[in-house]
Length: 326
Image (cartoon, rainbow, N blue to C red; front, top):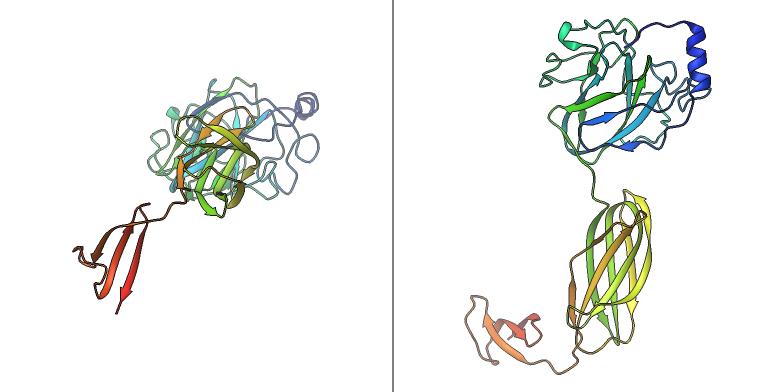
């Protein structure tokens, strides 16, 4: 949206209030915000002529990012706290850096006349979807200038993508609410998505391995050992990757382990001190002779040690092995 001001006022705003607002704030649900930065694209702001799309620079702006957890159509409504405030916006993605390096995929710089699709709009603007009750008709345009109606077409998104949004207040800043809509869903991702955590005995030592699908704000991992699953002792600290959206692998060796059942616990710590403990894993390091506790055929019937054919043998440590006798 756009309410026209004099050139001198625009220059004053951009020079006096300019500040950087990347990195963006992660928004996980409907959100009340107050833009806290300003700029003129290519000069004081974080946009350039190649990346500002329809906006023509920043004016009292804020950057937010959303994480898609369920795919579908993505849209939102920006509702100014004061109806005649003039908000514009642009969206980059999927998985855009902040500041962006490409042109936005959606952009609106339309005039605020409080009567876009009817009086009920009350200065609202946004990305329209057919199930958005505040603007119930779909749009066909992806970008618009001052002659637009304040609304652009919805975005088809998939789970795991992120989208970067610039909310730009061209007039007096009294804040806004942004409500997300469409058939997709957003949420904050977990600080870490663990792929696996395992332990293997090799000689006198235990080898521990784990990997992650993604990490966010991850500082380090602490590994603990216990022989009773209650009294834990720290055996190692490994640095985490910080932020990652690709598979990361870690490993450590627990040397000269006690020859009993050993339990291991993995805990991840964030840079802000938050932490998350993962499942406990166990390994039997008892080196006594294994005994056979059961032999069955392929249909589960008990058989003798002299049974001819395929038999399934269960040992005293719980391990199972298939043996073929001819």
